[in-house]
Length: 262
Image 1 (spheres, rainbow, N blue to C red):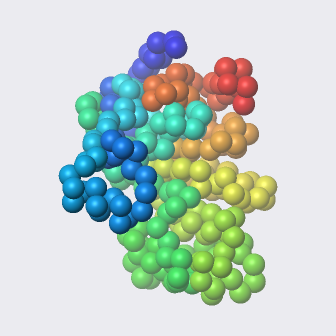
Image 2: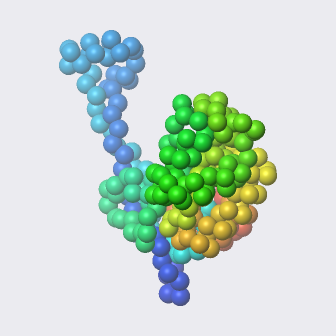
Image 3: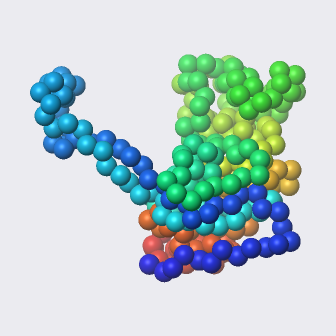
């Protein structure tokens, strides 16, 4: 494992996210006996005070430091379990640092594959709720409605169907369309584009370029390296919770591909 790359400061650009020696430690519970069995057997163990749950620590982020600047689109790559999603959650303020810190200029917004849309409600009701949750007024929501529906490119009539009837691709398109309906200070996208088709990915890239111009910065986690290379001006490679490399997309992706065979 090479040392973490040096943090390079560009005094000519406006910093929008500063991650300073960030450590994230999860505390999870597990059973000393493996936790197997039914709920009834688990309750019996508790009543007998046997195999009581024990807390374990998972060191998910290990001393990461970098600066993101206004106008950046930063791809975050790495193998499963490398800490990509944890990093985005920390930037979004959803995970408190164990030590170090995350400092943002503006409000981060996290968009993931499990973004909080209501499966039992129709697509159009989710558009209204999603826009209001992002802080748009009812008038702004009505003004954005047709644009969102067009961008999501759902099958005819599906905007009035419950989200539970949508394919994964349809759900992903609607989530992204809602999130892209407003300007974000910092937009964090976690695999939300993975299930879209080629046409949607092209539209998504154009929308991200637009958001970069109007907003602060965009972070994109995706296993599709082509999407990262085409969309981002910078790539961060994470490995076992550490920052392995940070720089030009082609150089970082080439090094990552050579090291992992991906």
